[in-house]
Length: 281
Image (tube, rainbow, N blue to C red; front, side):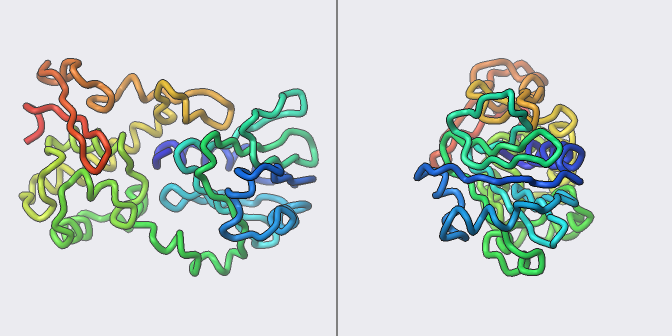
């Protein structure tokens, strides 16, 4: 799950979960369920007691992390890993076998954390301690924040001296872009995956800066990207629509939407990079 999908989830939770009181919370007894919370909690009870009886008052996002704040200033921090997601449910719906955390609301309905690979992370800490949480300290600049400015971005690019694909996927450099959207951003900017960040013209930097913002916003408007594995589904269990609008990712051998040249792919650090050999230079 990348930034657009997490932001879609944040907006949905803001509408569906804020103001709701948690009547009960449960971490399932499986080894995988415990693994999700074990980095910050020794027991399942230590996790659930910080949520039971509390009410969510707002939902924030930091990069790929969601932060659900309660009325007693506790923060449920969630990172979804490769396959984690939240699902809004009811008692009539059977729990998915990969449900690890279950929160039932006082006036009906529930919130379920589902994660087949169990690679996500959930923990609860006081809001005042968020600044000292190691995982959040490593989150880079957010492309949707006002702090993501052209001058700052240009300076940071020149300083890193890395190939663009790898740099855009570095969560300490810029938060939220993964394998899918790094390829889409580079196509939109007309830049190859292996261009060096310190070897771009001023015009190319501006194109890249603009492409990051536009690509992310377009994916959010389409409610995210759901691929064949359906690893991402929204809060209501529905797929995102942005897959139909991807320009290069997953389109190896298909004609480029601009020039009709077949899309190519290469392996970079065990990840595939999709690109058009004509439109990207």
